[in-house]
Length: 341
Image (cartoon, rainbow, N blue to C red; front, top):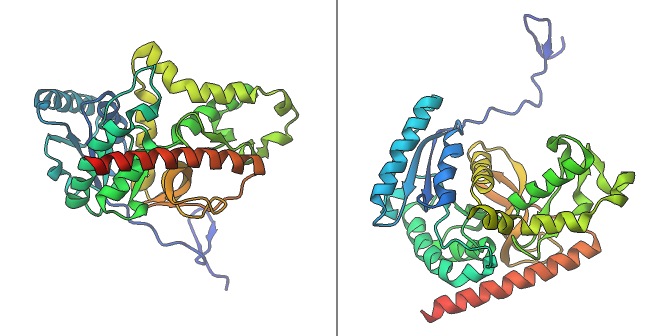
């Protein structure tokens, strides 16, 4: 007799090679910097994640009234939506204890005349102190950095928290990759789900688009005749300038980063094993270039992030090296400044 069992519809289901079901437990998520634009909005899409049953909003002392106002406003929105998610706030980082994911958005915001790197030293002071406390009070958490310059801040958080490399990651070039994905979809007049692309390297001017890893409808983009007419340089420049342009028009980027944050939190808590491009600590995964945190493809699940070994076209390797050395130099300068203080 063949292995398997027949259901009521007469279907035969094999009992071989069946993966055991993954038990997804409910989780507590903390948002550090919850009174800022990105931090406060992120609580909204994060509350829609089915694995989240509690959100802790963390702000600095003196922001108690705003935190309480946020709590009440979010509770009203959750009630209207029918979301069963507990919401609390604190000005004490010790209260992140028990959180499975800690999202760090706290830091100085840039204006439209600043590069993200201009925020390096000032935000490193904030991140260093917070990461140390998070590592002490929530040592098993995944620490998710959003504060800019995010690649440098991910390195600061990794060193100061005392956590393992797989536990600490940054938003990196995930949103940049989504921005390029959207532009490609518009150019080819297809649904965004038909486009797969990645940007690696710095979340900033030296970012590297991987055209060699870009497909439309499963077909490598350079095998489509219309690719020859695609204004690739203008598209990439659009992505590079996107954040600065939004800041110039409306003062800050909020909704794009907020939704991107929620996507990554869901990927972690859902144990999804998706490969997304985030800032992570690499050793030799990309042509033996490494020993820093920078945007790379990584497998993301409930254990954290694991960079994926990849091989690039020669011009992409050269561009990635330039990006790596830029981030390495800025990271060294920030750590040198922190050591002096």
